[in-house]
Image (cartoon, rainbow, N blue to C red; front, side):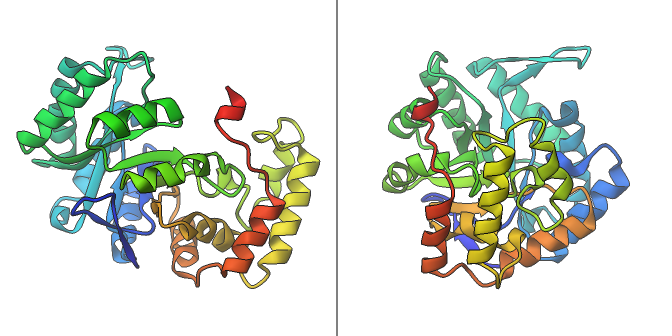
Length: 304
């Protein structure tokens, strides 16, 4: 699988990583999926301290034992969960970040994290204090690089201006083109996008019938059921040499600002289908432009 540079860093990650949130709570199954991902050539694994209240990090850590040097590992911080593990609150303070990184390292059974990400954030946060925490963790050798997971353009601009982030993790698909609003700015600042949700909760897969039917009950973003079915039909007609899954993933990878897509997988079959789609031939420029002509381009600023 091809690799792309993450920002201006020394990290080169596969064009598809594994979003580990979908692994579930059955460790043997999670272990099989992670090992299969490595066998298929994936080197990029994304987890978070919040996923199943730390259990996800523990699964990932145990599954990667003996393989750590082959992997680019990322996790996230900022959500402080309750002792009862029945909820959480936002805490981007320096004290919390520097304490929680040690817990993530313990659960992941590693001495360092390749990419440590702030798991959210608002413009009202103590941003300089947060940045200071990440910079100190770099100096201490506990993390190699840091980024943010955010969909807020004002927050992204502040971190780009004031910090050394190398990436922004954002939900991005051909049905959710809002991140494209930030692409030129991020590219100018040598910051990569990590794209989660490239398959739009299963709407952009070849077995999407049940998912599409659910849109009758509740719209998907600004798409009504009728708009969605017409759009999917138009996209399929444009790229009839590709499966819908291939089209969705190759659309996200078309712009070099995107370093990797990280679809989740709850089964080996899903994982293999996603990898096959990632290694398929890219969309032709004309196909890409035709898709953009038939899908919406809502922006974050239009939703403020």
